Amino acid sequence: MFERPASRRQFLSGIAGGAAALSLRPLARASNLAPSAPEPAPPAVKWAGPLPTKHLAWVWQFNQDGEPERIRETLAQHGLGVAMKTHDGTNWMSKWDTSGKALSGPQQIEKIASFFEAGGVPFHAWCVVKGNEPMLEASMAASVLASGARSLSIDLESYPGFWAGTQYAALQYTGLLRNAQPDATIMTTIDARPWEYDRIPIKEFAAASNAIAPQVYWSDFGTASNINRYRSMGADPGAAGVTPAFTLDIAARRLAGLGLPIHPIGPGLISDQSAWAQFMTESYARDVEALSVWRFGTTTPRVWEMLQANPPRPRTYIVQPGDSLGRLAGLWNTSIDEIVRLNGLANPNLVVQGQTLAIPRGIVAPVITPPSAVVSQPVSAPVAAPVAAPPVAAPPPPTTYVVQPGDSAWSLAGQWNTTPQRIAEFNGLTNMHVIVVGQRLRIP
Image 1 (cartoon, rainbow, N blue to C red):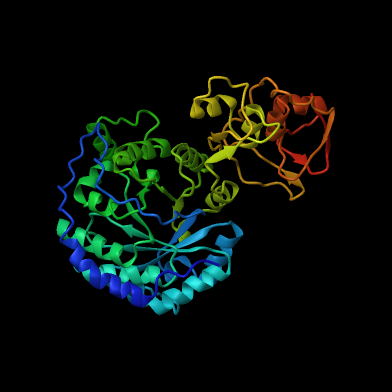
Image 2 (spheres, rainbow, N blue to C red):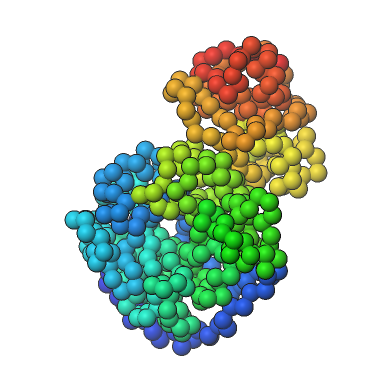
């Protein structure tokens, strides 16, 4: 299923060797971000651990979010992974979780990790770091990774009950953890409001991380005090307020200088499907492959549907024989102009076999029709693929086409250099969002 991380013996020897390595790492100056400048990049090693390949649902406690069986079944159904909280400071979650399957240490973590993995749900973990006993906390974090977690997200916040350590404690923690688990995937998760960055040792943790996971909780950030804080930084949300796009944009720009990819976390307790569509669109526009939702016990069905309908997608595409930008725009629910802009193409009518293109990620709505119908509908007003010149030496299109699995009016419009509306009109379709596998369509 997946490669077992380093053994506990390897991990303990890494911890022992890590203390000596700390003396070689210089102390960094505390952050002082200017409103117009990104955080300066730390002298960080580029760690090799892979980022999550599925969207993740975060779990707090089994007695709060549900039994492992129900969580696994729901996530498997929607093609998601799990990020389970394993410990808080120096305490395993069994201190607070009264369920019989609470995480009480490495053995139970290994058991729960195997349970989720056996059900097709990738197991990831997260923890709260406090910095009061950095060596013990680093030891616990490394043992989580050694017990089967594919990645560990470190929750680094400045509020009571969260980070309370010194800058040197941050260096101790990250140095010991990385010496024990040099090949692991570690993400640092932070409050997305940029004025919080000065209150945490973000550079020290970023230097040991594969990615930064900002908590983009736009539904909680739209208070008058927060809006005033944004404005004081020169970032006015305007009449639209604190939207997903605004929150993620400000966070991404301020984090850009760290030189790390971002893995955004959105709020699950929200019924506005269009807001999540905007959040996913903005994330994909920043080359994010997968994202997370907080948290399982409060996430609404519409958010599960959005995550299922928009799985992580490859960042690039290699041009195949017969491809055109119109066809690719239809297949990826985007537009020719967006592909041209993203790739800096001088001639939108010419793509070459073997050429690698970056693909802007469009957002589609969840499938709500019977299984026999194939739907691909943008959440916002559908964008018809612009008519493009046919590819060089491409054969003329046939007069009829038999609908295949995965087809939509948008993908066919892109493939045949027409529009979904024209296909609908040409075939007398009352609903261009619904075409059925095996249906014969005339192509205008």
